[in-house]
Length: 311
Image 1 (spheres, rainbow, N blue to C red):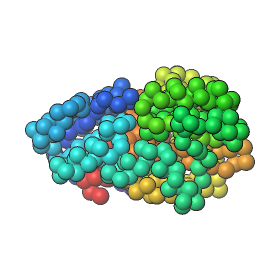
Image 2: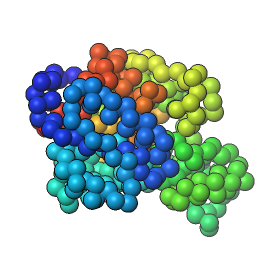
Image 3: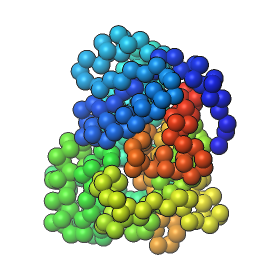
Image 4: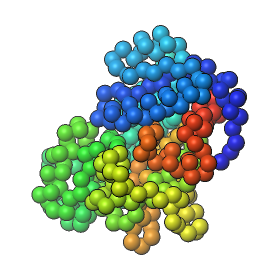
């Protein structure tokens, strides 16, 4: 990856406000990510103010008068373009993708529609509602993955292989009040790749003894295995990286993001989603991947700042 001038980044950083917490279903993970990044900023000597985002966020931002906002808000209200629009109106620069890319990436249906239109491989899908024909969906997909349309951190996701289990999974996912979709279950390895300003980090292979890579596998289970770099041939890796870059650019992403994808039995890759504010916890994939190429947590934070300050 490109080199950065540490002293220059620190000199330009000025007063950084870090946003975390919020009110989405991913609040607890956001707090962990935010605390980790805030600790790094402070250790680097950056003047840092931390805000747990609530209803007074506009007044708090005006009072803090930051030179730059580091956005560590996961989920709705922070990752979907809402906070990005607020910061644009306040004319405060911020890390990560802008309004449109954030909104598109957060909406799994919209992102998949764009990828399909561009000829990028993603699993067949449908939007579920009270009038869905559960039997027809299972007939078409065989097994289906049910998930909230706007959710993250694998919350609300379930696998269904019968009309009854599909309807139950739908009703459970409705608890997140985000709309619900189903996509064809792809049996095979799951991968994740961090992208920082169009530069790719090493792709990681995710392994779990659980039925699929759910919330517990991501953030709790110590038995989760992360293989980095992923054991793919140079030819297969090149194909995966072409898909990753296309997925990132198709949505207009910038700054740090993470692209998740699957590989089926035939060796074909299928996009799952793009996360525009990926986790920065001790369990998170992006810091682990960056470490594989000699980029420790502090340098990763500096690179996130550098992409905005010198981009």
